[in-house]
Length: 225
Image (cartoon, rainbow, N blue to C red):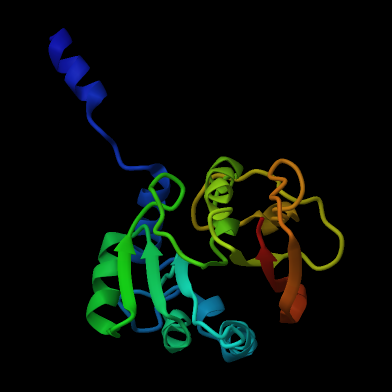
């Protein structure tokens, strides 16, 4: 009896974040849009994605030698697909295995690779630039901290976050899942406590004000040490 209990204790369980994100897509919590996988309006509405794509393409094409990009939390890849041709290699990563399998079948390019990883707990591929588009906003402070520790391995880190408009108290903790800190009138600022992400330079690439007081979506390019 005791042996069985010990065996059960030693069994590896899925990370709660993985289960939460699998549920998001299985139950279509970010919308249906007649698709097997849909990452929400923030990944599809032209007013949101077009300025972002223009800014990212401008950044990526400014280099004489194309960059190796790791898209951490690639989602349904509606945005990533527009950036692949501007990179040396594009590694698209998500925690949901079925989503990655779907993307592999739908999107193909010689310099494109998909991987199923938990970016908070797994070893990340190496690259020049990491992109996290509206990913950290869904994660607990503990998981954000784990991820930020790995991001210093990239020379450039591009983070997009949905923030309250005006002043707010940053980095209120949440449980990882579908929701964000907006319900707490908060948003992520990786440069301040408890994260204190160290960078050489930061530059706001694009800021999009949403209608009806729903906040702003801000993309910042960081250069690390």
